[in-house]
Length: 175
Image (cartoon, rainbow, N blue to C red; front, side, top):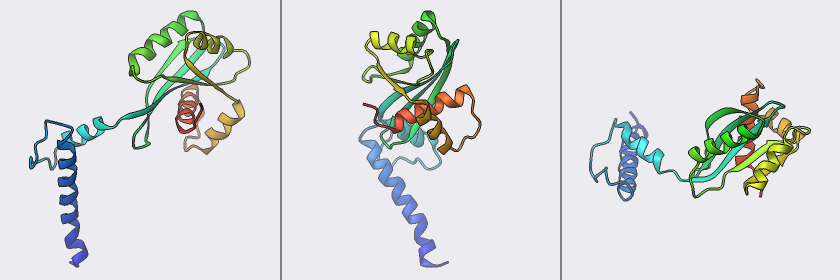
């Protein structure tokens, strides 16, 4: 074996020790020098340490239903689309959606609702959210359709459209 391959395990061990030392300051469960090799709890605790930068609900509006995907951007700029649900496009559906959003999101963040302009179907919902002090962004349909073409997923369903709208909202500065 060459020297380069002999040093590789050393770098892995050094990286694990650096991560363990860094995590020990924030997480009390891991003590310095504690053996964590092969233990997935270190990965889980590191994953839990990620901070949320932004939360968005992507809404695909149809005549009778709202297809919603909740997403968040973490401090490593990764995107996590973590929940999906369908609601009726009426007052009771709007109220159920706001209750669902309240359960999912953290209090310190204002969730931005991003939707595509779909004729007149989105207007009632957008005004409902705006009247309740929510952040609402309405995007032109050609921007969303062009964005969807850039994604890996070529199957277009209501669920995939709401996920793409949420991802669009997370990646763009919509202020």
